[in-house]
Amino acid sequence: MTGSEESPAFRLAYVPGVTPTKWVRIWNERLPDVPLTLVPVSAADAFGLLRDGGADAGFVRLPVDSEDLSAIPLYTETTVVVIPKDHLVTAVDEVSAADLADEIVLHPLDDTLDWERPPGRPAIERPATTLDAVELVAAGVGLLVVPQSLARLHHRKDLTYRPVADAPASRVALSWPQDETTDLVEDFIGIVRGRTVNSSRGRRPAPAPAQPKAKRPETGGARRKPAAGKPSGNGSRSGSGGRSGSGGARGGKGGKGGTRGKPRRRS
Picture 1 (cartoon, one colour):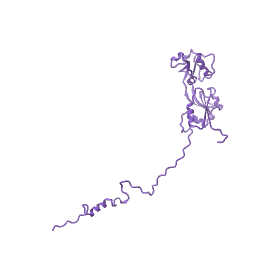
Picture 2 (cartoon, one colour):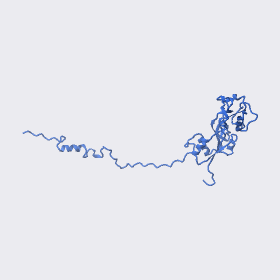
Picture 3 (tube, rainbow, N blue to C red):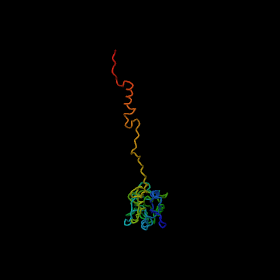
């Protein structure tokens, strides 16, 4: 690397409510030589940031303009209504949009839910942000319907939430510019999709140097060692320890095993 070349780095944007901790940890384990920088961004500004090159990829909320941005849907969030802890809705485990018909339901300008028509009665003015709307709920001005992650992000001790069964859901995706699908982007896609280090589409570690094959023992011309208890060579039947030798010894001494002579005549 020359002095004019920049060290590789990866910039990851994320919208409120998304927690990228798990993926960042895996990145640091697999690519410790490539620093990852987190770039927080509002849901409304996330796509402009990616298009302008302010981040290499980002966790965004769908829908995504597919003309110039690629996206991989990751998960769908539960939609909840944020309410004061002493509200009547706390008596049930789940509500419907119809249950909120008589309530003032705040609709912030940065709302991420694709409503055809928000439930409840509209407030006189729309809050600028979700955080502003949460503060109004705490002040008793109205209720707020948001993805569950945002309810947790802006949690207050005096507020709680309940799922809304028939509300639109918010989907989170990984997005990046189509013309900027770099090797580092591919690496991060592999991490998000759960690919292993040795995946065919992931970055492989450098192969280990080939080990020399062990030499086989030379066998040509070498005589095998006789196994214990077995005779060796051609003398297995003619040596001094064989049967023929021992039988001959007994015969030479006139033993029972020797050759018989002619019987003597009695005088």
